[in-house]
Image 1 (cartoon, chains in turn orange, purple):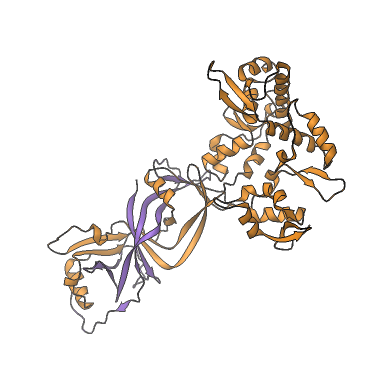
Image 2 (image 1 turned 180 degrees about the horizontal axis):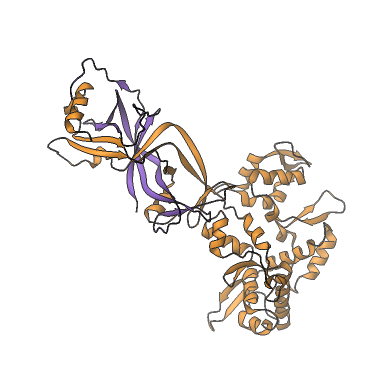
Length: 392
Length: 113
Protein backbone atom coordinates (compact mmCIF):
# COMPACT_ATOMS: atom_id res chain seq x y z
CA UNK A 1 0.00 0.00 0.00
CA UNK A 2 1.41 3.37 -0.89
CA UNK A 3 2.08 5.83 1.87
CA UNK A 4 1.67 9.58 1.77
CA UNK A 5 5.44 10.01 1.88
CA UNK A 6 5.84 7.85 -1.22
CA UNK A 7 3.13 9.78 -3.02
CA UNK A 8 4.71 13.12 -2.16
CA UNK A 9 8.12 11.88 -3.21
CA UNK A 10 6.73 10.83 -6.57
CA UNK A 11 5.19 14.26 -6.99
CA UNK A 12 8.56 15.83 -6.32
CA UNK A 13 10.29 13.65 -8.91
CA UNK A 14 7.53 14.49 -11.36
CA UNK A 15 8.15 18.15 -10.62
CA UNK A 16 4.53 18.74 -9.70
CA UNK A 17 3.80 21.25 -7.00
CA UNK A 18 1.65 19.80 -4.28
CA UNK A 19 0.11 23.24 -3.72
CA UNK A 20 -1.34 23.21 -7.23
CA UNK A 21 -3.21 20.04 -6.47
CA UNK A 22 -6.30 19.15 -4.51
CA UNK A 23 -5.61 17.29 -1.30
CA UNK A 24 -7.41 14.10 -2.30
CA UNK A 25 -5.20 11.49 -3.96
CA UNK A 26 -6.27 8.11 -5.26
CA UNK A 27 -3.61 5.41 -5.17
CA UNK A 28 -4.70 3.00 -7.85
CA UNK A 29 -3.76 -0.65 -7.81
CA UNK A 30 -5.05 -3.73 -9.56
CA UNK A 31 -7.38 -5.95 -7.60
CA UNK A 32 -6.63 -9.63 -7.10
CA UNK A 33 -9.13 -10.85 -9.67
CA UNK A 34 -8.57 -8.13 -12.22
CA UNK A 35 -7.43 -10.43 -15.03
CA UNK A 36 -10.03 -13.12 -14.60
CA UNK A 37 -12.26 -11.62 -17.27
CA UNK A 38 -15.40 -12.01 -15.24
CA UNK A 39 -16.33 -8.38 -15.73
CA UNK A 40 -17.54 -6.76 -18.89
CA UNK A 41 -19.04 -3.44 -19.88
CA UNK A 42 -22.36 -2.89 -21.57
CA UNK A 43 -23.50 0.41 -23.03
CA UNK A 44 -27.01 1.45 -21.98
CA UNK A 45 -29.61 3.84 -23.25
CA UNK A 46 -31.56 6.08 -20.89
CA UNK A 47 -34.50 3.69 -20.67
CA UNK A 48 -32.37 0.74 -19.65
CA UNK A 49 -30.37 2.80 -17.20
CA UNK A 50 -33.54 3.85 -15.38
CA UNK A 51 -34.73 0.26 -15.62
CA UNK A 52 -31.64 -1.00 -13.82
CA UNK A 53 -31.76 1.77 -11.25
CA UNK A 54 -35.32 0.78 -10.50
CA UNK A 55 -34.04 -2.70 -9.72
CA UNK A 56 -35.72 -4.37 -12.69
CA UNK A 57 -34.03 -7.32 -14.30
CA UNK A 58 -32.58 -7.89 -17.70
CA UNK A 59 -32.05 -11.19 -19.45
CA UNK A 60 -29.66 -12.34 -22.13
CA UNK A 61 -31.22 -14.86 -24.46
CA UNK A 62 -29.90 -17.00 -27.27
CA UNK A 63 -28.78 -20.49 -28.10
CA UNK A 64 -25.20 -21.16 -29.04
CA UNK A 65 -25.97 -20.80 -32.72
CA UNK A 66 -27.89 -17.57 -32.33
CA UNK A 67 -26.69 -14.01 -31.81
CA UNK A 68 -27.33 -13.09 -28.20
CA UNK A 69 -30.01 -10.53 -27.42
CA UNK A 70 -30.77 -8.59 -24.27
CA UNK A 71 -34.36 -8.38 -23.07
CA UNK A 72 -36.07 -6.08 -20.61
CA UNK A 73 -39.69 -6.78 -19.71
CA UNK A 74 -40.95 -5.44 -22.99
CA UNK A 75 -38.07 -4.70 -25.35
CA UNK A 76 -35.39 -6.66 -27.16
CA UNK A 77 -31.91 -5.46 -28.08
CA UNK A 78 -29.16 -6.87 -30.32
CA UNK A 79 -25.80 -7.26 -28.58
CA UNK A 80 -22.68 -6.39 -30.47
CA UNK A 81 -19.10 -6.15 -29.29
CA UNK A 82 -17.50 -2.79 -29.91
CA UNK A 83 -13.74 -2.68 -29.86
CA UNK A 84 -11.94 0.47 -28.88
CA UNK A 85 -8.23 0.95 -29.21
CA UNK A 86 -8.16 2.21 -25.65
CA UNK A 87 -7.94 0.63 -22.28
CA UNK A 88 -10.93 0.98 -20.01
CA UNK A 89 -10.35 0.54 -16.29
CA UNK A 90 -13.28 0.27 -13.94
CA UNK A 91 -12.83 1.39 -10.40
CA UNK A 92 -15.46 1.22 -7.64
CA UNK A 93 -13.85 3.75 -5.32
CA UNK A 94 -12.94 6.76 -7.33
CA UNK A 95 -14.30 10.23 -6.86
CA UNK A 96 -14.23 13.36 -8.96
CA UNK A 97 -13.51 16.71 -7.32
CA UNK A 98 -17.19 17.65 -7.14
CA UNK A 99 -17.57 14.95 -4.53
CA UNK A 100 -14.58 15.91 -2.44
CA UNK A 101 -15.28 17.21 1.05
CA UNK A 102 -14.57 20.91 1.38
CA UNK A 103 -11.58 22.29 3.20
CA UNK A 104 -9.50 19.28 3.99
CA UNK A 105 -6.68 20.26 6.33
CA UNK A 106 -4.15 17.87 4.78
CA UNK A 107 -3.68 15.26 2.09
CA UNK A 108 -6.12 12.42 1.99
CA UNK A 109 -5.06 9.14 0.43
CA UNK A 110 -7.71 6.82 -0.98
CA UNK A 111 -6.46 3.33 -1.80
CA UNK A 112 -8.56 2.42 -4.84
CA UNK A 113 -8.63 -0.99 -6.45
CA UNK A 114 -9.17 -1.48 -10.15
CA UNK A 115 -11.76 -4.26 -10.39
CA UNK A 116 -11.36 -4.96 -14.04
CA UNK A 117 -10.31 -3.65 -17.39
CA UNK A 118 -11.29 -4.13 -20.98
CA UNK A 119 -10.73 -2.65 -24.36
CA UNK A 120 -14.15 -3.59 -25.64
CA UNK A 121 -17.75 -3.30 -24.52
CA UNK A 122 -21.16 -4.53 -25.57
CA UNK A 123 -23.29 -2.19 -27.63
CA UNK A 124 -27.07 -2.45 -27.55
CA UNK A 125 -29.36 -1.72 -30.40
CA UNK A 126 -33.13 -2.04 -30.13
CA UNK A 127 -34.31 -4.76 -32.48
CA UNK A 128 -37.39 -6.69 -33.44
CA UNK A 129 -38.01 -9.70 -31.22
CA UNK A 130 -37.15 -12.90 -33.03
CA UNK A 131 -40.54 -14.54 -32.81
CA UNK A 132 -40.81 -16.45 -36.06
CA UNK A 133 -39.54 -19.52 -34.24
CA UNK A 134 -42.57 -19.41 -31.94
CA UNK A 135 -45.20 -20.50 -34.42
CA UNK A 136 -42.91 -23.21 -35.74
CA UNK A 137 -42.45 -24.65 -32.24
CA UNK A 138 -46.13 -24.67 -31.48
CA UNK A 139 -47.13 -26.05 -34.88
CA UNK A 140 -45.38 -29.30 -33.99
CA UNK A 141 -48.21 -30.12 -31.68
CA UNK A 142 -51.41 -28.38 -32.74
CA UNK A 143 -54.60 -28.69 -30.75
CA UNK A 144 -57.61 -30.27 -32.38
CA UNK A 145 -59.86 -30.55 -29.41
CA UNK A 146 -59.73 -32.79 -26.35
CA UNK A 147 -60.25 -35.86 -28.49
CA UNK A 148 -57.69 -34.89 -31.07
CA UNK A 149 -54.88 -37.16 -32.17
CA UNK A 150 -52.20 -35.06 -30.55
CA UNK A 151 -53.78 -35.34 -27.12
CA UNK A 152 -53.46 -39.09 -26.88
CA UNK A 153 -50.10 -40.06 -25.41
CA UNK A 154 -48.29 -37.25 -27.10
CA UNK A 155 -44.55 -37.28 -26.66
CA UNK A 156 -44.16 -33.91 -28.30
CA UNK A 157 -42.61 -31.23 -26.18
CA UNK A 158 -45.10 -28.76 -24.76
CA UNK A 159 -44.25 -25.21 -23.78
CA UNK A 160 -45.20 -23.08 -20.84
CA UNK A 161 -44.49 -19.34 -20.90
CA UNK A 162 -41.19 -19.91 -19.09
CA UNK A 163 -40.22 -22.68 -21.51
CA UNK A 164 -40.86 -20.34 -24.40
CA UNK A 165 -38.85 -17.55 -22.80
CA UNK A 166 -35.90 -19.94 -22.57
CA UNK A 167 -35.82 -20.45 -26.29
CA UNK A 168 -37.42 -17.46 -27.98
CA UNK A 169 -35.31 -14.32 -28.24
CA UNK A 170 -37.93 -11.84 -27.13
CA UNK A 171 -39.03 -9.99 -24.05
CA UNK A 172 -41.96 -11.41 -22.12
CA UNK A 173 -44.34 -8.70 -23.30
CA UNK A 174 -43.33 -9.18 -26.93
CA UNK A 175 -43.74 -12.92 -26.56
CA UNK A 176 -47.22 -12.59 -25.09
CA UNK A 177 -48.18 -10.19 -27.89
CA UNK A 178 -47.05 -12.62 -30.54
CA UNK A 179 -48.89 -15.50 -28.86
CA UNK A 180 -52.04 -13.43 -29.19
CA UNK A 181 -51.30 -12.64 -32.84
CA UNK A 182 -50.98 -16.32 -33.74
CA UNK A 183 -54.15 -17.17 -31.79
CA UNK A 184 -52.33 -19.38 -29.32
CA UNK A 185 -54.10 -20.27 -26.11
CA UNK A 186 -53.01 -21.74 -22.84
CA UNK A 187 -54.40 -25.21 -22.25
CA UNK A 188 -53.48 -26.79 -18.94
CA UNK A 189 -50.59 -24.38 -18.51
CA UNK A 190 -49.13 -24.98 -21.96
CA UNK A 191 -49.37 -22.75 -25.00
CA UNK A 192 -51.05 -24.41 -27.96
CA UNK A 193 -52.00 -23.36 -31.45
CA UNK A 194 -55.29 -24.64 -32.74
CA UNK A 195 -55.27 -26.64 -35.93
CA UNK A 196 -56.62 -24.18 -38.46
CA UNK A 197 -59.46 -26.42 -39.61
CA UNK A 198 -60.49 -26.90 -35.99
CA UNK A 199 -60.47 -23.18 -35.40
CA UNK A 200 -62.57 -22.62 -38.51
CA UNK A 201 -65.00 -25.33 -37.46
CA UNK A 202 -65.64 -23.52 -34.20
CA UNK A 203 -66.04 -20.18 -35.97
CA UNK A 204 -68.45 -21.87 -38.34
CA UNK A 205 -70.59 -22.95 -35.37
CA UNK A 206 -70.50 -19.42 -34.02
CA UNK A 207 -71.45 -17.69 -37.26
CA UNK A 208 -74.23 -20.19 -37.83
CA UNK A 209 -75.55 -19.42 -34.38
CA UNK A 210 -75.36 -15.69 -35.10
CA UNK A 211 -77.38 -16.32 -38.22
CA UNK A 212 -80.03 -18.53 -36.61
CA UNK A 213 -80.42 -16.17 -33.68
CA UNK A 214 -80.46 -13.14 -35.99
CA UNK A 215 -77.91 -11.37 -33.85
CA UNK A 216 -75.87 -8.47 -35.07
CA UNK A 217 -72.23 -9.37 -35.64
CA UNK A 218 -71.29 -6.63 -33.26
CA UNK A 219 -73.38 -7.99 -30.39
CA UNK A 220 -72.75 -11.67 -29.88
CA UNK A 221 -73.57 -12.77 -26.32
CA UNK A 222 -70.95 -15.00 -24.71
CA UNK A 223 -73.30 -16.82 -22.37
CA UNK A 224 -75.67 -17.95 -25.11
CA UNK A 225 -72.79 -19.11 -27.29
CA UNK A 226 -71.42 -21.20 -24.46
CA UNK A 227 -74.82 -22.63 -23.69
CA UNK A 228 -75.77 -23.51 -27.25
CA UNK A 229 -72.36 -24.62 -28.48
CA UNK A 230 -71.03 -26.11 -25.27
CA UNK A 231 -72.33 -29.58 -26.21
CA UNK A 232 -70.32 -29.44 -29.42
CA UNK A 233 -66.98 -28.03 -28.33
CA UNK A 234 -65.15 -27.21 -25.07
CA UNK A 235 -66.36 -23.89 -23.66
CA UNK A 236 -62.78 -22.60 -23.32
CA UNK A 237 -62.29 -23.11 -27.03
CA UNK A 238 -65.49 -21.28 -27.92
CA UNK A 239 -64.49 -18.34 -25.77
CA UNK A 240 -60.94 -18.43 -27.10
CA UNK A 241 -62.14 -18.23 -30.70
CA UNK A 242 -64.51 -15.38 -29.85
CA UNK A 243 -61.52 -13.55 -28.39
CA UNK A 244 -59.44 -14.22 -31.50
CA UNK A 245 -62.03 -13.02 -33.94
CA UNK A 246 -63.85 -10.42 -31.94
CA UNK A 247 -63.57 -7.69 -29.39
CA UNK A 248 -64.87 -8.41 -25.96
CA UNK A 249 -66.95 -5.84 -24.11
CA UNK A 250 -69.37 -5.62 -21.26
CA UNK A 251 -72.81 -4.23 -21.77
CA UNK A 252 -73.43 -1.49 -19.21
CA UNK A 253 -76.93 -2.37 -18.06
CA UNK A 254 -76.95 -6.09 -17.43
CA UNK A 255 -73.21 -6.55 -17.06
CA UNK A 256 -73.31 -9.21 -19.79
CA UNK A 257 -70.27 -10.05 -21.87
CA UNK A 258 -70.58 -9.53 -25.61
CA UNK A 259 -68.28 -9.80 -28.57
CA UNK A 260 -68.10 -7.55 -31.60
CA UNK A 261 -66.97 -9.91 -34.33
CA UNK A 262 -64.32 -8.61 -36.64
CA UNK A 263 -65.69 -9.03 -40.14
CA UNK A 264 -62.34 -8.45 -41.78
CA UNK A 265 -60.66 -11.15 -39.73
CA UNK A 266 -63.41 -13.64 -40.48
CA UNK A 267 -63.40 -12.95 -44.21
CA UNK A 268 -59.63 -13.25 -44.18
CA UNK A 269 -59.72 -16.60 -42.42
CA UNK A 270 -62.28 -17.90 -44.89
CA UNK A 271 -60.03 -16.82 -47.75
CA UNK A 272 -57.12 -18.67 -46.17
CA UNK A 273 -59.23 -21.78 -45.93
CA UNK A 274 -60.03 -21.57 -49.64
CA UNK A 275 -56.58 -20.59 -50.85
CA UNK A 276 -54.62 -23.18 -48.97
CA UNK A 277 -56.13 -25.91 -51.09
CA UNK A 278 -54.50 -24.98 -54.38
CA UNK A 279 -51.41 -23.38 -55.81
CA UNK A 280 -53.38 -20.51 -57.29
CA UNK A 281 -56.86 -19.48 -58.28
CA UNK A 282 -58.48 -17.57 -61.06
CA UNK A 283 -59.05 -14.26 -59.34
CA UNK A 284 -62.63 -13.59 -60.35
CA UNK A 285 -63.69 -17.14 -59.62
CA UNK A 286 -62.05 -16.94 -56.25
CA UNK A 287 -63.78 -13.68 -55.39
CA UNK A 288 -67.15 -15.23 -56.21
CA UNK A 289 -66.60 -18.36 -54.15
CA UNK A 290 -65.14 -16.37 -51.34
CA UNK A 291 -68.12 -14.05 -51.04
CA UNK A 292 -70.44 -17.02 -51.08
CA UNK A 293 -68.45 -18.79 -48.39
CA UNK A 294 -68.52 -16.08 -45.77
CA UNK A 295 -71.38 -15.66 -43.34
CA UNK A 296 -74.52 -13.93 -44.48
CA UNK A 297 -74.17 -10.19 -44.07
CA UNK A 298 -70.40 -10.02 -44.44
CA UNK A 299 -68.70 -8.34 -47.37
CA UNK A 300 -65.42 -9.58 -48.77
CA UNK A 301 -62.80 -7.14 -50.07
CA UNK A 302 -59.39 -7.83 -51.52
CA UNK A 303 -57.70 -5.43 -49.12
CA UNK A 304 -58.67 -7.79 -46.29
CA UNK A 305 -56.03 -10.15 -47.66
CA UNK A 306 -52.94 -7.98 -47.20
CA UNK A 307 -50.02 -10.09 -46.09
CA UNK A 308 -52.01 -13.27 -46.73
CA UNK A 309 -52.47 -13.50 -50.48
CA UNK A 310 -50.98 -11.93 -53.55
CA UNK A 311 -52.69 -11.06 -56.81
CA UNK A 312 -50.74 -11.68 -60.00
CA UNK A 313 -51.85 -8.86 -62.22
CA UNK A 314 -49.53 -9.85 -65.04
CA UNK A 315 -51.19 -13.17 -65.76
CA UNK A 316 -54.25 -13.47 -68.03
CA UNK A 317 -56.66 -14.11 -66.46
CA UNK A 318 -55.47 -12.56 -63.21
CA UNK A 319 -54.75 -15.06 -60.49
CA UNK A 320 -54.44 -15.04 -56.72
CA UNK A 321 -52.37 -17.28 -54.49
CA UNK A 322 -51.61 -17.75 -50.82
CA UNK A 323 -48.53 -15.91 -49.57
CA UNK A 324 -48.34 -15.50 -45.84
CA UNK A 325 -45.92 -12.91 -44.51
CA UNK A 326 -45.17 -15.11 -41.50
CA UNK A 327 -43.83 -17.80 -43.83
CA UNK A 328 -41.21 -15.44 -45.21
CA UNK A 329 -37.66 -15.05 -43.83
CA UNK A 330 -37.29 -13.01 -40.64
CA UNK A 331 -34.01 -11.37 -41.57
CA UNK A 332 -34.53 -8.15 -43.55
CA UNK A 333 -32.06 -8.80 -46.36
CA UNK A 334 -33.21 -12.40 -46.71
CA UNK A 335 -36.83 -11.24 -46.85
CA UNK A 336 -36.10 -8.83 -49.68
CA UNK A 337 -34.09 -11.48 -51.52
CA UNK A 338 -37.03 -13.84 -51.21
CA UNK A 339 -39.59 -11.29 -52.38
CA UNK A 340 -37.51 -10.20 -55.35
CA UNK A 341 -36.82 -13.82 -56.16
CA UNK A 342 -40.55 -14.35 -56.44
CA UNK A 343 -41.25 -11.29 -58.49
CA UNK A 344 -38.76 -8.98 -60.09
CA UNK A 345 -40.65 -5.74 -59.66
CA UNK A 346 -43.08 -4.72 -56.96
CA UNK A 347 -45.24 -1.67 -56.51
CA UNK A 348 -45.15 -0.16 -53.06
CA UNK A 349 -48.76 -1.09 -52.53
CA UNK A 350 -48.13 -4.75 -53.26
CA UNK A 351 -44.93 -5.13 -51.28
CA UNK A 352 -45.84 -3.03 -48.23
CA UNK A 353 -47.79 -5.72 -46.35
CA UNK A 354 -44.84 -8.07 -46.77
CA UNK A 355 -42.23 -5.75 -45.30
CA UNK A 356 -44.18 -3.72 -42.76
CA UNK A 357 -43.05 -5.93 -39.88
CA UNK A 358 -39.43 -5.27 -40.78
CA UNK A 359 -39.59 -1.58 -39.98
CA UNK A 360 -37.46 -0.48 -37.06
CA UNK A 361 -38.70 1.67 -34.22
CA UNK A 362 -38.99 4.87 -36.21
CA UNK A 363 -38.50 3.55 -39.69
CA UNK A 364 -41.05 4.01 -42.45
CA UNK A 365 -41.75 1.62 -45.31
CA UNK A 366 -40.37 4.23 -47.67
CA UNK A 367 -37.09 4.37 -45.78
CA UNK A 368 -36.87 0.60 -45.78
CA UNK A 369 -37.44 0.45 -49.53
CA UNK A 370 -34.88 3.16 -50.14
CA UNK A 371 -32.32 1.12 -48.25
CA UNK A 372 -33.00 -2.31 -49.67
CA UNK A 373 -34.41 -1.68 -53.13
CA UNK A 374 -33.93 0.30 -56.26
CA UNK A 375 -36.71 2.16 -58.04
CA UNK A 376 -37.68 2.34 -61.66
CA UNK A 377 -40.71 3.25 -63.72
CA UNK A 378 -42.82 0.63 -65.38
CA UNK A 379 -45.72 1.85 -67.52
CA UNK A 380 -45.59 5.14 -65.67
CA UNK A 381 -45.85 3.39 -62.31
CA UNK A 382 -43.07 3.48 -59.71
CA UNK A 383 -41.81 -0.02 -59.00
CA UNK A 384 -39.12 -1.48 -56.78
CA UNK A 385 -36.58 -4.10 -57.67
CA UNK A 386 -33.57 -5.65 -56.06
CA UNK A 387 -30.33 -3.78 -55.55
CA UNK A 388 -28.38 -6.88 -56.34
CA UNK A 389 -28.79 -9.75 -58.79
CA UNK A 390 -31.26 -12.26 -57.41
CA UNK A 391 -31.94 -15.72 -58.73
CA UNK A 392 -35.54 -15.92 -59.82
CA UNK B 1 -30.00 -0.07 -7.07
CA UNK B 2 -26.40 -0.82 -8.04
CA UNK B 3 -23.61 1.58 -7.05
CA UNK B 4 -21.74 3.91 -9.35
CA UNK B 5 -18.20 3.20 -10.40
CA UNK B 6 -15.63 5.27 -12.27
CA UNK B 7 -14.14 4.56 -15.65
CA UNK B 8 -10.61 5.57 -16.54
CA UNK B 9 -9.80 5.48 -20.22
CA UNK B 10 -6.19 5.27 -21.33
CA UNK B 11 -4.62 5.00 -24.70
CA UNK B 12 -2.56 1.95 -25.40
CA UNK B 13 -1.96 -0.99 -23.15
CA UNK B 14 -0.80 -1.58 -19.66
CA UNK B 15 1.98 -4.00 -18.97
CA UNK B 16 3.28 -5.21 -15.74
CA UNK B 17 6.90 -4.34 -15.34
CA UNK B 18 8.07 -7.56 -13.83
CA UNK B 19 5.95 -9.96 -15.83
CA UNK B 20 4.32 -11.11 -12.65
CA UNK B 21 0.89 -10.19 -13.90
CA UNK B 22 -1.17 -7.24 -12.91
CA UNK B 23 -3.16 -8.64 -10.03
CA UNK B 24 -2.33 -6.93 -6.79
CA UNK B 25 0.23 -4.55 -8.25
CA UNK B 26 0.25 -0.76 -8.01
CA UNK B 27 -0.88 1.18 -10.99
CA UNK B 28 -0.40 4.85 -10.30
CA UNK B 29 -1.49 7.93 -8.42
CA UNK B 30 -4.47 9.97 -9.50
CA UNK B 31 -4.36 13.65 -8.58
CA UNK B 32 -6.55 16.59 -9.49
CA UNK B 33 -5.28 20.10 -10.02
CA UNK B 34 -6.96 22.93 -8.15
CA UNK B 35 -8.91 23.54 -11.36
CA UNK B 36 -10.13 19.96 -11.29
CA UNK B 37 -7.95 18.59 -14.10
CA UNK B 38 -7.15 14.93 -13.48
CA UNK B 39 -3.45 14.07 -13.44
CA UNK B 40 -2.28 10.49 -13.48
CA UNK B 41 1.24 9.44 -12.64
CA UNK B 42 1.87 5.95 -14.03
CA UNK B 43 5.33 4.52 -13.98
CA UNK B 44 7.55 7.14 -15.56
CA UNK B 45 4.76 9.14 -17.15
CA UNK B 46 2.46 11.98 -16.29
CA UNK B 47 -0.87 12.05 -18.06
CA UNK B 48 -3.31 14.92 -18.09
CA UNK B 49 -6.95 14.11 -18.56
CA UNK B 50 -10.53 15.30 -18.52
CA UNK B 51 -13.65 14.28 -16.64
CA UNK B 52 -16.38 13.55 -19.16
CA UNK B 53 -20.01 12.69 -18.61
CA UNK B 54 -20.86 9.59 -20.68
CA UNK B 55 -23.39 10.07 -23.42
CA UNK B 56 -24.45 6.50 -22.85
CA UNK B 57 -23.87 5.11 -19.37
CA UNK B 58 -22.28 1.72 -18.92
CA UNK B 59 -23.43 -1.22 -16.86
CA UNK B 60 -20.66 -3.30 -15.33
CA UNK B 61 -21.66 -6.92 -15.61
CA UNK B 62 -20.08 -9.72 -13.69
CA UNK B 63 -20.33 -13.24 -15.02
CA UNK B 64 -21.37 -15.95 -12.62
CA UNK B 65 -21.56 -19.60 -13.59
CA UNK B 66 -23.82 -22.20 -12.14
CA UNK B 67 -27.35 -21.91 -10.85
CA UNK B 68 -28.04 -18.84 -8.84
CA UNK B 69 -31.25 -17.42 -7.55
CA UNK B 70 -30.53 -13.75 -7.50
CA UNK B 71 -33.06 -11.04 -6.91
CA UNK B 72 -32.99 -7.52 -8.14
CA UNK B 73 -30.48 -6.99 -10.87
CA UNK B 74 -29.94 -10.58 -11.90
CA UNK B 75 -29.53 -11.31 -15.56
CA UNK B 76 -29.69 -14.86 -16.82
CA UNK B 77 -28.93 -16.44 -20.14
CA UNK B 78 -31.56 -18.51 -21.82
CA UNK B 79 -29.41 -21.62 -21.79
CA UNK B 80 -30.64 -24.46 -19.66
CA UNK B 81 -27.79 -26.07 -17.76
CA UNK B 82 -25.17 -25.13 -16.87
CA UNK B 83 -26.49 -21.62 -16.64
CA UNK B 84 -24.48 -18.45 -16.85
CA UNK B 85 -25.70 -15.45 -14.92
CA UNK B 86 -24.72 -11.92 -15.61
CA UNK B 87 -25.31 -9.57 -12.73
CA UNK B 88 -25.33 -5.83 -12.97
CA UNK B 89 -22.75 -4.88 -10.39
CA UNK B 90 -22.50 -1.19 -11.02
CA UNK B 91 -23.34 1.67 -13.32
CA UNK B 92 -20.80 4.04 -14.81
CA UNK B 93 -22.01 7.51 -15.76
CA UNK B 94 -18.78 9.42 -16.19
CA UNK B 95 -15.20 8.71 -17.10
CA UNK B 96 -11.77 10.22 -16.83
CA UNK B 97 -10.13 10.09 -20.20
CA UNK B 98 -6.44 10.57 -20.61
CA UNK B 99 -5.73 11.45 -24.19
CA UNK B 100 -2.71 13.69 -24.15
CA UNK B 101 0.62 12.11 -24.81
CA UNK B 102 2.23 11.09 -21.59
CA UNK B 103 4.99 13.32 -20.38
CA UNK B 104 7.96 11.27 -19.35
CA UNK B 105 9.35 11.83 -15.92
CA UNK B 106 13.11 12.23 -16.14
CA UNK B 107 15.01 11.35 -13.05
CA UNK B 108 18.71 12.12 -12.90
CA UNK B 109 19.31 11.44 -9.32
CA UNK B 110 17.80 8.37 -7.70
CA UNK B 111 16.12 9.60 -4.59
CA UNK B 112 15.65 7.50 -1.56
CA UNK B 113 11.93 7.21 -0.79
